[in-house]
Length: 224
Image (tube, rainbow, N blue to C red):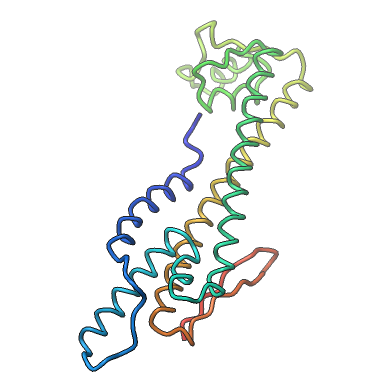
């Protein structure tokens, strides 16, 4: 299977990297200023970085660590929702992928082992290997032909090929949506980290809210 879940994989690597950073800042939240200004500034800086690292790993964790869990609750539940959506989409896409490959093997005689995406695209566009090879000759692309009999397929009719194409499209669309959801997860983690960083320095003027525009959900971070 092609690497279609790049977003979640990147998220896992990012979480592992930032976990080490968060541990290095595993201290109490910044104290109020004392007579020792330099020490207080250092504590504030460390606390801000710790809050940032925690919220990048788990959205809302840094806000909770700063004793303001209500300001990170939306990000936390949004992350749970996006993660659930991503897992569901990947599972659905994988099931449909297995379905269209098995269907092509049973109905058109296509061997599903070791096939790349180009092969399945061609199976969806042409009724048979012979029809595909003829099209490549007309296009002056003889090097693109399938000459090995093991690459053979032959649909009994266009209706069957259409069913295969539709099932494959469902799988492809679900994989694309899962990748988009994975990107949204990464963005939510980053926004939560920036929000926690600002919250550690100026809690009164840090706000995160959701908005909807053109039917799409977005996040707005105000750092006044």
